[in-house]
Length: 278
Image (tube, rainbow, N blue to C red; front, side, top):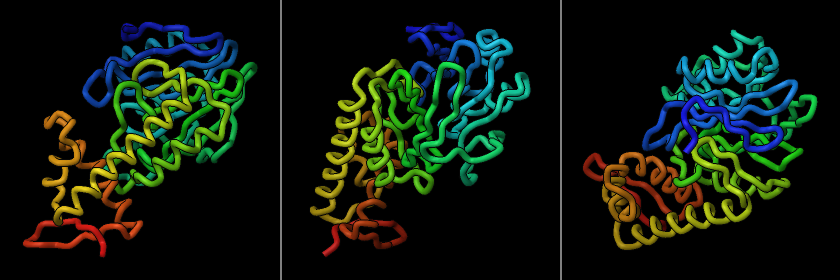
């Protein structure tokens, strides 16, 4: 396991620093990636922890040109504005509405668009807009190596939480499949180790989400169910300690099924319940 603050070379162009913020939702910590040799870009500088910022600054020196964020959750982007202030680097990414879970300090000069590129002397970083986990999520593809920096779109060792309304399950599944339109070989996730088979990982994740959706729909064919009832049935293979988080993704599945008119929601005695549409 990589030590916090250690700079690890992953390829000729890519190095990684892991932030000291381990936990149930962040795994070993947030991965910050440093790309390039002469002029550099940092992808996901992580939380505003002084030791982590110092580790990045010690690696980039005066060569940092861009700071790219996959999204603005507090474990991915708060260090960006501090690094930009220290280095003069340009912020790259997208913002979203304040849902009380966003880093509002991240303010790029403009919103990076789908398929737009940021370039350096020996690298090209291509933005792939991948809404789903949250609507401003962007993956960045290093064209020269076929490595995609996936933020929370794909994580190693666990599935991501989809949090409505900014998160959307239908968009997430579609965005996973979008990665297959590009020449992606390796996934560099926001948390955990490199994933060597992008296609296999995408197919596994899509299959997992659709199987979970089928389990939701199957439970609703038995009877109308509340969110609390459903989470115990649908996530019976998940530690109950994680069920509060699981409810968020479950709600995203239910919204997707409602939008497809396969289920509908009613209010009974002040409790929302879902059931299969006739």
